Length: 123
Image (tube, rainbow, N blue to C red; front, side):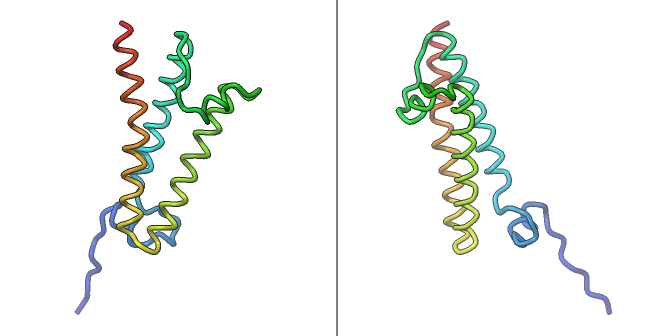
């Protein structure tokens, strides 16, 4: 008698075996990277149009000698930090890690929506 192993979808497999090099929430992290990249693009467009950065920390980075390159690095550090924190938390409490990942995407999407509305208002 042969026993067949259950087939796992890529999402289930990633959540079941994080020690194999997979991450718990790949699609949430992809969304976070996408939304963060949109935020950078829209910020750049708004700055070109004479606007300014309303986030005081990001604005301080923009005013530094690093300029927009520093802002890219700042955003990269935030995204990597969030992913690492979500992964750490999810190893101990998967539901809490998932909730944090979803909230990170939602919070990061807010400036994108706001910037888009500001740009629409200009045209």
